[in-house]
Structure formats: C-alpha cells, structure tokens
Image (cartoon, rainbow, N blue to C red; front, side, top):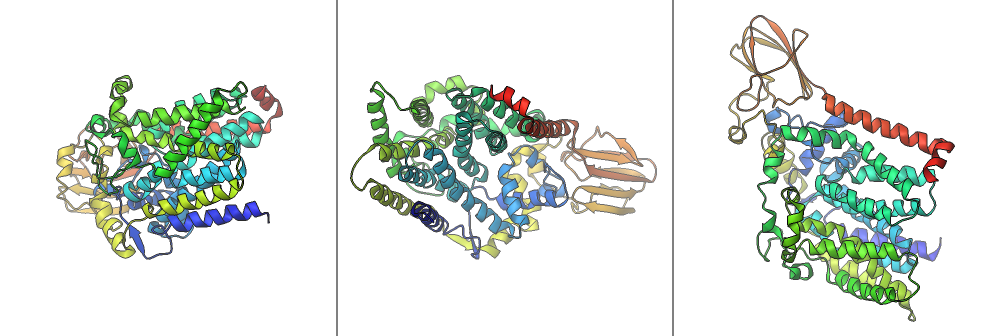
Length: 551
C-alpha cells in the first residue's frame, strides 16, 4: 500500500475518533440537541419502510395516532440514510449517531475528491480536514441536531466534484452518479436544496460541456419529484406558510465578529450579537482562507491564469457573498429576496455555502507555496486543525435508555413530537384547539355515540370498524391521502370537528374502512421520478442518445 494511502487512512481515523466521541454508535449514552424529534422521525420513517409505504409521507403515530404528514413536506434524504442504517440492525438512537458521524467522515472524503481535482495531494488533504472540521459542522450536529442540513454539507462538495468530472470527460458512469447525487442534494433540506439549484446551475455554466451537466440537473430534479411535487402543491393544506412568517429574519442577522469569535453555547438564535449558540467558522479556517485568497488575488493579476481560475473565482464570490448575507450590513440586499425572506427565516443559514470556499483557499495556499518540507507542514497543520477544533465536536450526554424514554417512548411519539413540528398540522384541524390536546380514547380508530361496535383492523395505515347507526368521528387529521369507504363505497368527508376529524352520520349498520393511499398529486410525483430513472437508464445505455447529449 502506498504511503499516501496510509496517510489518508490515518487522517480519516484521526478525524473519526476526534469528532466521534459523542457519536460512538456502540456507547450507552446519547447527546441532546435542539431538534429533539429526530429519533421519533426516524422511527416513523422506518415504520413506513417496513410496511412498504414507499416513499414515506405519513408519521401514523404522531399527534395521538391521528397521523401527521411530516414526510410529505420535510426533505427525506437524510432519513433514507438513517432508516437504512436502522434496518441494517442498529437501534434507532445508534442509527442517528452513526448517520451524523458518517456525514462528517464522508464530508472529509468528498471534499478531498473535489479539491484533488485542482491541488496536490497534501494540499487537498489539508483542505478536506479544514472543511470537515469547520465549526459550523459542530453547530449543526451537536447544537442544532439538524440531520438534513448536515447531510447537505456532506453532499455539497460531492455534487460539485461530479459535475466537474462530467465536464472534463463526460461518460455514462459520471452522468449516472451526477443525476443520483443531484437528486439526493435536492431532497436533503427544504430551503438549502432550493438555494442550491441556482448555485449548481451557475457552477455548470462556468464549466465545459454545459449541455450534459444541465441535462443531469434537469433529470436530478425530475428524480426528486416524488418529494418536490407534493411538497410544493400540497403544502398549502398545512400551516407551514403561516409558521414560516412567524420568524422575523431581521432578528437573526449576525455581527461580523461572531464569525470569528462568539461564545460557544447550546441556546438559540436571538436578536443582537449575543446569541445563545455560536456561529464561529474556525479561526484557522478563516486565517488560511484569507491567506489563500490573497495569493489568489495576486496571481490573478498575472497574464496567464490557472486553467481552473473560473472555478476558484466562483467559490471566492460564493463564499464572500454568502457570508455577507449573514451579517447586519447586508440588510439592504434582503429587500430583493422578498417574499423569500420569510421562508429563509435565518440569514445565517447561508454559512452552509461558504465552507467549501474556506477549505478551498486554504488548500490553494499550500498548493502555491514552494518551501522545503511543505508536505510535512501541511500535514502538521491538518492534524492541528482537527485536534484544535475537536473540543467543539462534543457534548455532554445522557444515558441512552433515559434518552429513549424521553424521546422515543410511545408517550413522546404519540403526544409530544408533533407539537415540536406543528407547522405540518393539516388545515382541516383548528390549530388552537389542537394545541389543547385531546379528550377521547385516541388508541381507538373512531369515537362514536354508540358503544356497540366491532374492531376489525387497527394498524398504523389501515383501520376498519363495524359500527351501529349513530354519529361517528374518525380519529385522523383528515388529509387527502386518507381514503374513507363505507360498505365498500368511497366517502368524501365534508364535515370535521376542531381536530380535523371527519364526522359521519351512520344510518344503518356499516363497515367503515380508513386506509392510507397516496393522492393523485403524490402519485404523479412518483411517476415523474420513475420516468427520470427510465430516462437515465436509456441515456447511459443508448450510444446514439449519449452522443447527442455530449455533442
């Protein structure tokens, strides 16, 4: 085995153990973070997969077992990964830890692949360590616990790498992986995925062979339709928009100094410069970025620029502009984002688009300097940046059994989890009435004025009851993917109580069936994704079609 391979493996091990102290999937502890519903979501997502409800759209046990359409509107990619780990045999808590740890490790690998396209081995290795150890990763994992945003950071360099490789020498294999990765990143996070679309298009426009990459972006979007189409069309059926407007983005700008130094805490984002959470990027990352950027500006004045000059210029602009959008001084620019500002909510989310640029110009610096022992110095700086930042990739943990009892018990899943993501409540329910909880036996599929009924089925996705004449309330938050039939005939409810439960007057002994079925909109999204898969297969296997694309 070559020395460089050993160096890479050792760096990977160092990073894994330095950053994985709190994410050890074999430990008997678990850390807490802002998004406490993550394990409950994974449990419900896996429940869908086990019951072959693919793609998952409903958390059937959330909100007193009345069903909650969270997966119809919350980007699913990170849950595909985490539930997949769960299905391999790890319990849900360990699956979540392993998913976070895997995202950090793969961020190192993927950023190395991207940087290696332009820089020498040790420079790229340093840049990869700089990317994966950036403190915003630690914030996303150990403070916010945002699984979707963390995986977005992981896929960001991989996507640019595949688009670049496809532009240099287009081939069916690179095209296939570009489509798959683009679809993945377009379904990692509702907001960041949308913002990444223009970023990916602009990146492609500065590369060669634009046609093949633009087609891969188009097909990647089509492949994501199983989520994007229902999310766009059916979200007005929930309170999502109303909740988005509750957050005033003007309260969440940063002071420039916070990017350099801010108190490391586990609180939230508040107005002013003293947030409860830190937004430090990492001092070493900033220092090497500024030095590397200075080298780049100086070299740009030369007559003969590097062949990858447009890519570096793109990353420099993206990094500086993204960071500028996070600070108070950019408020005048946000007028151009209206009405997107209410959707973006937190300007500091743009930090996600700056991390690769920080790493890239750190690598550029080491690639450009020519001094004795440069590789050794780069390696020492790499180890330093990992060890120096590792203290932030840690959080005090609680016993795993206590964590499960607190966040994975039936009590939490059924009675509390939905209230933490209240924006996905269907509008058939009155929000204020729902906030007050329920006063009926929610373990039963119906509430009826007649006590004499026979329960035939009562599983998470289908319920069937033989009832006597009387007034019946179906214990679901009605949403179009619920199919109700009475004595085999489809029934369209038009009367609901304050919880969004259909109210039905039964005039004769009847069998009521309530089953989960995808809506027409959701099935159209599925079919578009299926079409994208077929189209990709045709393109990569049909030589004449491939030649037309790369011509």
